[in-house]
Image (cartoon, rainbow, N blue to C red; front, side, top):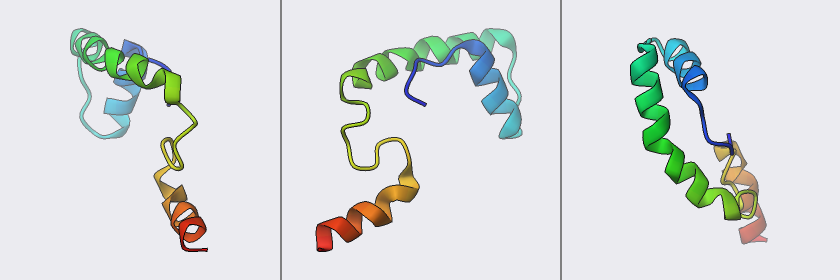
Length: 65
């Protein structure tokens, strides 16, 4: 996820995790973490494994070569 999440996204993620939250709480979470997403937006996609932790092995292998 590289875009600022909205309350619907937070609600869905919380439900999948087994900890459903109210719409009010989801909105508060989205407003709280939104600035972090906006702050990292300029460098999105430039880090070796910023969006997909499973690519760590690929990055590690490239570094060892």
